[in-house]
Length: 311
Ligand code: NAP
Ligand code: GLV
Image (cartoon, rainbow, N blue to C red; front, side, top):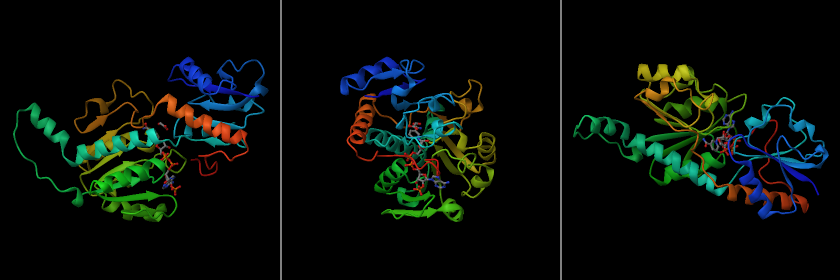
């Protein structure tokens, strides 16, 4: 029986190995770079980020599980063996964690917390005009497993919610736009824009000065997807000009954010350290092993990535 190759630069591999072993003792787990001597034994990968050119060394690889919902870290490898399916995380805890983060940050902007915090520092007691959620339009870019859940939660809170995807969608209570032609109409009324897109060739650098200029003046921007999707200089210029009134970022390029980056001290920027999605090792391992067991018993793998679309 084959083995699983594990790699994570972010987390303790031995803790993962112990949990894998507890749940599925007959699946040996090798921690990269120690693939156990015979590369032909490796049947599955569980990879959080690995240097390009490594995965092609395993001739019997049957599937690679991404250690995240994003798979850009795998597809950026020009030598990735493209016949090997990639499985992304689609997981209840991850979806809940991301939904909570997006709701938290949208509400924080909608209810003007940054302005009230500034007032508190100056001991200022002053009510600010407050529109209702029913008068606030939130636009979600990306209506996948995470984007659609956040969009629904915001609609349930009474916001006017619109979403943008690559292909046409119909989702109850969400005004859906799609494709290049749908972008400007989608942005035109979006007051709080949330990026929940995968990182692909099309979405790299997408949130630039041109796109930001299509938003109403004074809009807010939140990115929980990937740092390479926004252009830092353009976000800062839009804050300076007043085109944007606040930016909340959980993702950056590169990460971690450099200690001297202007975002840290900018009064209109909120920074969190790539922690919007949240799930436990246990839950991720449980889902991965359920998929492996199903695959071994002849079922199709769940949550595979469309290799040509890149997500
Ligand atoms: P997903 O299920 O693959 O959904 C992606 C969505 O984006 C789909 O609606 C897709 O449109 C749309 N899309 C893709 N390319 C597009 C384009 N060129 N134009 C317009 N729409 C496009 O992804 P997910 O699981 O929701 O995750 C989204 C991203 O969140 C991940 O890729 C990852 O980068 C990021 N993430 C971040 C964290 C964090 O902690 N910050 C945690 C988890 C995930 P269609 O529906 O038409 O296919
Ligand atoms: C985190 O960024 C993920 O892609 O799961």
